[in-house]
Length: 138
Image (cartoon, rainbow, N blue to C red; front, side, top):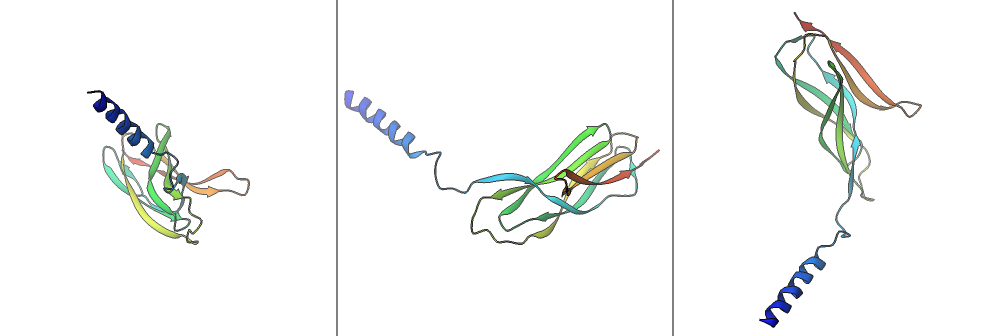
């Protein structure tokens, strides 16, 4: 019985030591992706669902699309930022590509919507946006 107890502790220690947080796996961080263009209808209808097409730029071969961050800042204002996972790889291929994606939008309010699409940083290093207003049919 004593040997079984020692064996179990040894096996547990071996399992714990084989799980290293400091391994050589790829590391990444999330980055905002620049919006190149988008497609919105000229107007919305209350309670309707829309697919909003967005073309965004992947800056290099080590960046992959991770989804859209759509943040409401007021009742009918939405900030739209495509998010990418960028892997830290010194052998990363330079040069990016434009990719099209989409997200679903539900018109919940009768007021005009303001969409602010992230386009990168301006010359002062501040976030820049393309803005478009979409009225709601009454």
